[in-house]
Each structure stands twice: as C-alpha cells, then as structure tokens.
Amino acid sequence: MQKWSLLQREVSLALCGIMLCSCVIFAGCGKDETPAAADPYAQLDARFPEGYPGAASTQERAQDKEYLAKIDAAAQEMNALQREAAAAKQACESFRAQVVKAMTEKLGKAPSEAMIADQLSKKAYYQELLAAQQSAAEAVEAKRQANQAMIRQRMLANIEAYKAMKAEADAAAQAAGLPVRGAIQPTAPAQRPAASAAVEPPVKPLEVPTVEVLSKTTGVPVLPSKSQE
Image 1 (cartoon, rainbow, N blue to C red):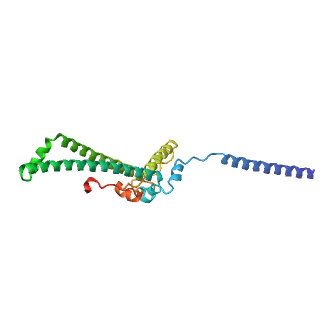
Image 2 (cartoon, one colour; image 1 turned 180 degrees about the vertical axis):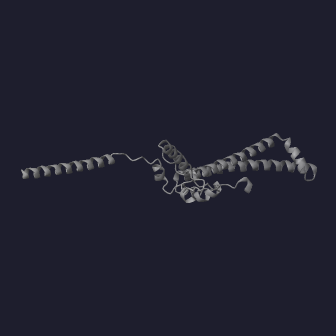
Image 3 (spheres, rainbow, N blue to C red; image 1 turned 135 degrees about the horizontal axis):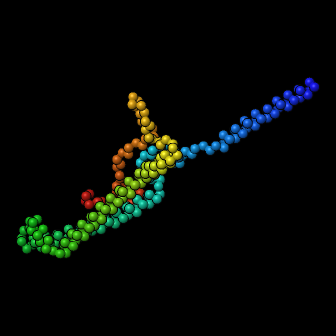
C-alpha cells in the first residue's frame, strides 16, 4: 500500500513537470511568432548611413561617368555657340569698319560716333548683322545658365534624394503611430528642448563652377566668353 502511494506521488510530480515545461515552451513560441514593428527609416539609414548628406564634391562628381559625359557634351555645345557668337560679332565690326572708312574718305576726317550711328541705322544689312549678333550672344548666355543648372542639380542630387526618402519615411512613421525622426517632442515649460541630431542642417549656398572651369578637368577647351574678350 505504501509503495502504491509513493508511485502515485512520483507520477503526479512527473505530470506536473511535463505541464510546466509545456507552458514554458508554448509561451516562448508565442513570443517569437509576434512580428516586430518594421522600422520606416530602415531604407533611409541603409542608403545614407551617415545621415543628412552634403553637396557632392568635385572628386565625387569626377567618379560619375554619366555626369562627365554630360559635361563634355555641354562644353562642346558651348564651344559651338561661342564660335557662332564670335563670328557674328566679327561680321558686325567688319561692316562697321567699312562704313567708317567710306565716311572718312568722303568727309576728309574721322566722323563722330553720332554720325556713324546715324549712318548705320540706315543700313538694313547692318541691322540684320546686329540682330544675329544679339541672338548668338543670348544663346551663349542661355546655354551657360543651363549648364550651371545641370551642375547644381548634380551637386544637390544626394540631398534631394535624402529629403524625398525622409518624407516618405516620416509619412510611414505617422501612419504607424511611431515618432517622426527629427520632430521636437513636447516638453514641460521649464525645460528647454534639446536639438535633435536628426534635424537636417541648412544647405550652404553653393559656388557653382562654370563650364570653363570644368573644361580644364575634362580636357575639352572652351572659347572665352564675350565678357572676357
């Protein structure tokens, strides 16, 4: 009888141990199966591990083959436009010199600038040459501004990409009820909110290099601009 009681007690203890182990195992499995909340800033941090980027340096842009090809094409186009502008200016100056020479021979002395201007205003051909020169100069200036815009866009490409990705991450964080990175949390009136390390620093004004400067790097010569003549 005593042996039977001891056997029952051992069986009961064994069953209790098995039940406890089962509870622990199932509790652990349930915890592992609960998915962790996704980090909306994971992709942003993967692409920009150092945080808010700066403008692309000359060395960084020099590694961009596509960008260098665009710079080379821009320098070639600028060369062509500057040649056209120089030819148009030379044509105007040559015709003006002929008119001045003819007036000098007729008057026996050098004509005044007012007389020259009046005479040239009556020459339709000179007015056509003058219009062509102005049009060529405007084309050079427009191309110069377009080239500078292209350079600036490449310099700020990483910054614009960071801003776009962060805006998407902020929206995802708000939708998930998570704190938005860089936002200042409300504090008590007596406390001063600390500056967040994730707040984006202001972008300093960029000194955009001209195509003339970049041509020294690419080896493509650029004719001197009108202002340099």
